[in-house]
Image 1 (cartoon, rainbow, N blue to C red):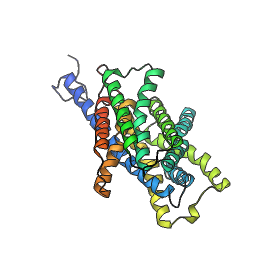
Image 2: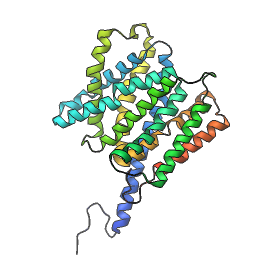
Image 3: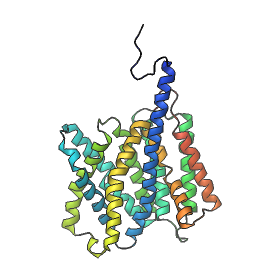
Image 4: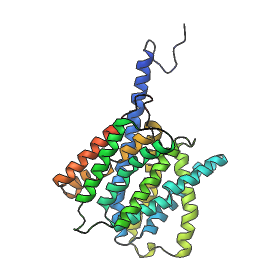
Length: 314
């Protein structure tokens, strides 16, 4: 008689035990994704607050990766193979300083609401399409329908978003779309990199800080000396701790547990959370058209995060 699996309760059917582990894994991945979404939803608002006042895009990028590199430096003291450093450099290009600068420029040129509606929402669509084209992983009808619903909701939010009646900057929207494509590429490469979430976050901050911060200092493009200390402190915590460390690690864990496509689709909930925060904190009730757009995004996320029948992976 074959021995019981050490991970399976005695007497439990193999399929039932495997199903329970899979459900628990997806639940944990979902919770990591929710944490990421919550931080990201506030990030667009916090970034918009400063880039339209005292600090500029380059200040926020330097704070984000300079502080992150210092705090995560102990992770890099362990022996890492050369491949890990190469992967970390690629990740820093896709989701490091270039990504943060593109999003901050897009936020500055459009609005926090539009930025939160464009980059996180387009990212799962790009992830699904890239996985289909490059990795030969067709998303299936349900996920295609989910991506279509997300895209429809995005269009509705962009059209109905309030920005003082001024048409959104096409260049700013282009920056945000490019950032979404870069982010999607990162999610697809992460699972096969062999890096754990902490190592990936540390390497992204290391390479971004090593390359960007010296340029920031030498070129003198910062406004830190002109900003209030309280604002610098708030941005230091949000950009350098929450975004560079907590959100990076939580998103990486979500990708590992849910799969790239499913984790990416969860990020499409950022504009939804941002809208809910606006209702609770600011008393800003979305218009009927915006509510319909949000409903489309929610439906799209539910479809896009369903496991595929064959593997259950994203």
